[in-house]
Length: 86
Image (cartoon, rainbow, N blue to C red; front, side):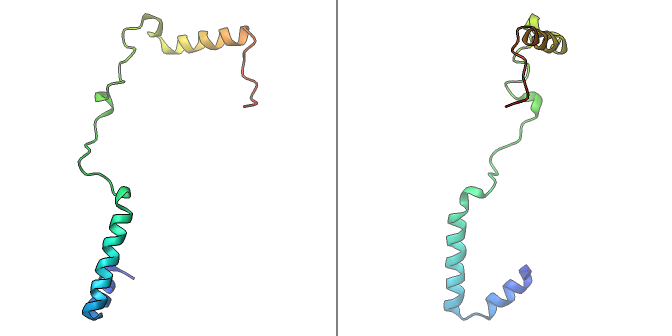
């Protein structure tokens, strides 16, 4: 049933039936109010988020690939390597 059909069916109801439909719609709106997207929240660009650049001045993380490689190497050498059994 599309919107036009629903409107035709609603118009065909007696006034009491139309009031009941309106009450039911109000009930559903209240029940699902928390599911509606908030229009007041504006989307920020990722680059404007406060956590971006958080570690920008850390000298030990200038080359993140190198840092990860060394961290993994240390873990494997210490015997703490992941076994795949999580």
